[in-house]
Image (tube, rainbow, N blue to C red; front, side):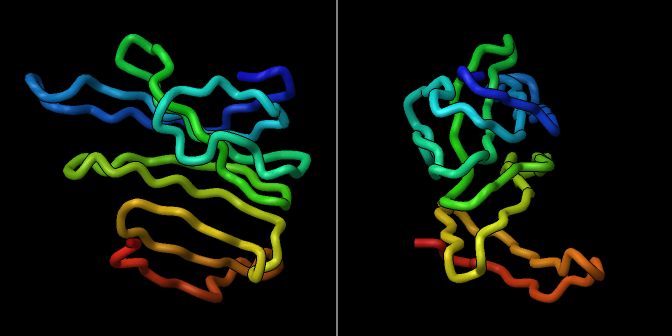
Length: 134
């Protein structure tokens, strides 16, 4: 982590077949650090400027940091869960933001699903799919 308070909330392991790329471990959580370790290829290299941001980090089979990225904007954000699809090896991160809907910006490089849940009732109020993010 960085110089601030960092907490991991979920882990996922990417199990690949023998002869393919090595296994990877993904860690997500919340950070108050402004200096997370950076490795080439990070999607977001600086925090969003709020009290906290989410983060995702990829570690090699030997648990060496391969990539880390902030996940957040101007409001408080956190990453709460992570999963790896076994067939495609796509990584899915879920979390929360305190940003109003008009402030939320998402940068993606592949198709994904999005769900918005009402905090008070737990009901899903929006579900959508981004098919072609480019």
